Every structure is written in structure tokens, then in C-alpha cells.
Image 1 (cartoon, helix red, strand yellow):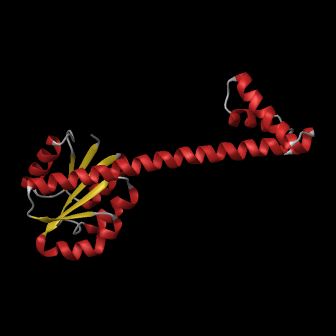
Image 2 (image 1 turned 60 degrees about the vertical axis):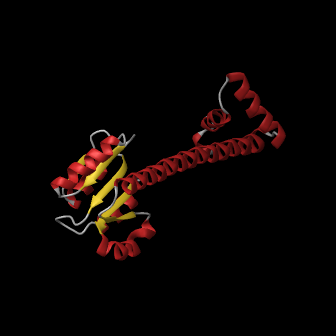
Image 3 (image 1 turned 30 degrees about the vertical axis):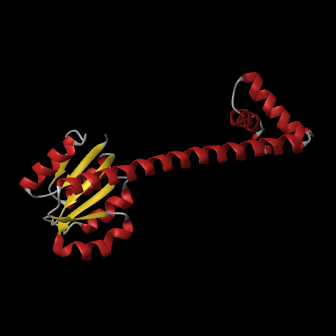
Length: 192
């Protein structure tokens, strides 16, 4: 499991939350007592899960939850007294924060942790897929630029330029993007 951050000022709540998270595979969750300290820690670490136990000494906590959703891929759980839960849910649910009314059962807390972790994993997979697609698009653009160079400067047809890049990639065991980069790097600075 990944890292967990607990933002809570209550000693007994901290023990319960840390123990429960440790039992679910989050070894030694980081516990901080305030939103200000938690904001500093968000910049330092890559957290899979953030649990905020309201109220905090420096703010109620929902502002920090929204910040955590904006700045991280972590699943964010906001623990708040039942009387305020509905109001808080209306304010922050659109950010993806899971509001859990206190008191809650162990089963409910475990289920919410699993849902938050699943959301984090899904978001990480989507980000990785997005990164991979961006690299692919960059490679296609590079190859297209190299083809244009071969067509305009070397008098090749589009099919010949394509074949030339493909053959060079196969012969040198490099990808087409690397070959395209070599072609473009070979240009004289004044012809770019």
C-alpha cells in the first residue's frame, strides 16, 4: 500500500485512525495536527490516502480537503460530526472528497478507505496512460516533421520518406522517433 496522511488534532482519534490504517496495510501513517502542517507535508510526499478529522485547530478542514484534491491524486476522506455532514457534503462532494459522518462503524470506515484507494489507483493509471499517449503524439509529430524535411529538402515522395525512416529504424534497432530526431538534428541551423 501507499502512504497515508492523517490530519487530526485528537489523540484518541489519531490512535484509532493510525491503528485502523496500519491494519489495512498503510504502514506508519503520517499524523499532523493542523491544516497548515498538512499543506506543507503534501508538497513533501506522495500520498495515496488523506484522512481529515474535523474540526482542526486552524480551520474546520473542508478547505484543506479541497486543496488536497487539487494538489494530489490521493483519495481524501473527511470525517465530520453527523450534524454537519450533510452540509459539508453539499460543499465538497463535487471535488471528489468522501464525507463520512461521525460516529461511524469500522466496516463503513474500511469500505470508504478501499473506495478512496481504488480511486487513487485508477487516477494513477489514467495519468500514466495520458503520459504514454502524449509521448506517442510527440513521436508522431517528430516523424512527420522529418518526413516533411525529407520530402522538401531531399526530393523524396511521402512513401519514400516513410520507408526511409522505417528502414533506418529497423536497421539501427531504434524507434522511429529517434531516427526522426537524428534527421532533424542533421539540419544546418540556418535551414531550420
